[in-house]
Length: 248
Ligand code: UGY
Ligand code: MN
Image 1 (cartoon, protein in one colour):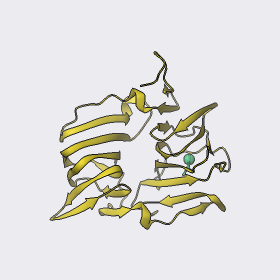
Image 2 (cartoon, protein in one colour):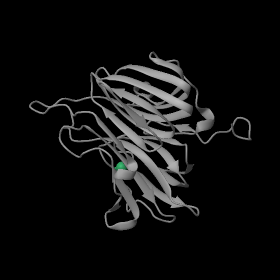
Image 3 (cartoon, rainbow, N blue to C red):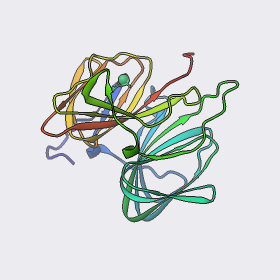
Image 4 (cartoon, rainbow, N blue to C red):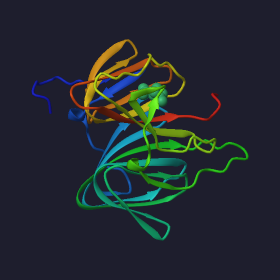
């Protein structure tokens, strides 16, 4: 909730959306028990070709189902729990992530305090002669941040292999205060983004928005974009992009 009635930083436009947590409204989705699921970005916005969920699993809550035609990328924002994969259970904690290919069963459980998840879902685009990827379980601390285009103060952690099998990429971008994206990017890939830490200013199309941890952004294909980190602590965001497929 903001202090001022009738005010929000949220804006939804045809080429981008900034969605702030004060406006989040949950949906009841099949398979989730004891969970609050907010569909932050989806094709229902007329533009996005993927879905971004914000899931809060209360104590001992469950998310069950099958990924179907979609692939899922699950990132633990806070809390801990488990994911059952085949006959094995994997522990999840803040910073853990799981990639699930299409047609895969899913069984998520929280332990103790609520577990908050970010989930990107996207229909998998098959390429003749290329197998769909296998499951990946990892943690952000295992992925070294590389200087972005030579800038030591803007580091990129690439969480999924950049190989033709994968039609989605998920990266974490961390900026020291004052560091920026080096130029205003304009590209075919679309983005779904969650601010994880700190604050800054995002240029989206022709507009400049102050943003902070918890904010969600959708950027359409070809939406000009730029970021500067502001304040006394680093800013970071995790984001999705569609990659490695021919444009139609
Ligand atoms: O990967 C990207 O396109 C990234 N540099 N975009 C962004 O951070 N807005
Ligand atoms: Mn970009």
